[in-house]
Image 1 (cartoon, rainbow, N blue to C red):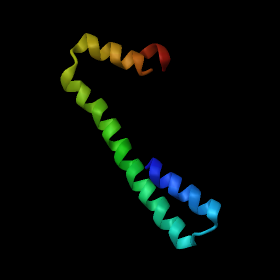
Image 2: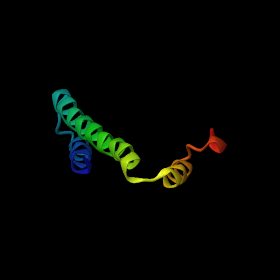
Image 3: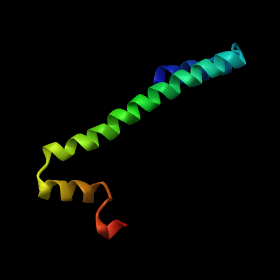
Length: 70
């Protein structure tokens, strides 16, 4: 994703891109961003099976989901 952003930035700097290039590159970046977000959020779901109740409460508090933060 970082490499694609870098390529897009360089293409703009060189003025060597078309609207189609922009669409293709931003679509690729968006797909990768979506995959990264999915992995990240699924990791939180996986924690449910790993942590006990006390650990889950602390985990939620550290993430800002305790009743004190709502």
